[in-house]
Length: 115
Length: 202
Image (cartoon, rainbow over all chains, first blue to last red; front, side, top):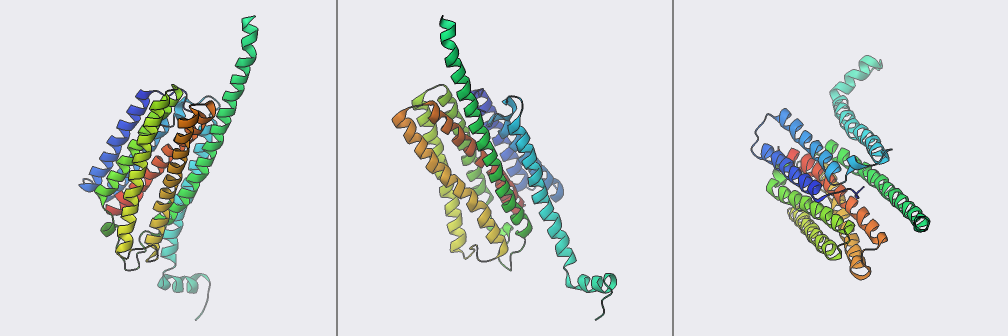
C-alpha cells in the first residue's frame, strides 16, 4: 500500500487534515450554526477527514486491481453503520416504548389484558 | 546469458512482493475487525452518554482546547510516521530512526495528556463507576489509549531492530504494518474527537 507514496501526498493530507480539524473546532467553539446543522457539518467534516487520510496516508486509491482492501473496507463500513445507527434507533424507540404510562395503555389496548 | 540469469531472481522478487502484499492485506483485515470493536464501543457511548445518573454532563466535563491539542499532536505523529515510511523505502536508515523517534515522542505526549485528563476526572470523583456515561466514556477512550500504548511498545521494538540490524526487507515490512496501525489509530481518534468531545461540548 505504500510503495507509490510521495512526500507531497503526505504534506497535502496533513495540511487538509489540520484545516478540517480546526474548522470543526471553531464551528463548535464559537457555536456558529444552529444545533442540527452544526451536528451534521462536524460529522461531515470527520467523514471527509477519514477519506483524506485513507487516500493520502494509507494510499487506498493507489491499490492494484482487484481492490480487495477497498472492498473489505466498504463491507466493514456497512456492518459498522448497521451496528451504530441500529443501536441508536433501537434504543431511542426502546426508551420511548418502555415509558411506564405508555406500556400500561399498550398492554390494555393491544394485548387485551385486564387489571 | 545475462537475461536468463536474471530471470530466477526476478521471479523470487515477485514472489516476495506477492507475499508482502498478502501480509499487508491480512493486517488490513485485522484493522477492520479492530474497527468493528471500536464501532461497538462508539454505539455503547452514543446510547449511554445521556445517562449521567445525577453526575456532571458531557458539557461540564470536557475541555475543548485540551482535546484539540491531543488531536493535533496525534495528527502530527501520523504525518511524521508517514515520512518515516518514505525514508524506509528510500533506504535511509538514520532518517527512519529520526522520524520514528519524533513519532514516538509525539505518541508519548498524547498518552501523557490523555492520562492527565483521566487522573483529573478520577480525582474529582468522576470515575467509570459513577454512571453509565462515564463507564462508556472510559471504555471507549481508554481502549484507544491502550492501542496507542501497544503501538509505542511495537515502535520501540521496530526502532531497536532498525538500529541493530538495518533496513532489511523484513523490517521494512514490519514498519509498513506499524505505520498502517498508527494511521488507523489517528482515524479512530478523529471520530472520538468529533463524537465525544465536539458533540459533548456542542
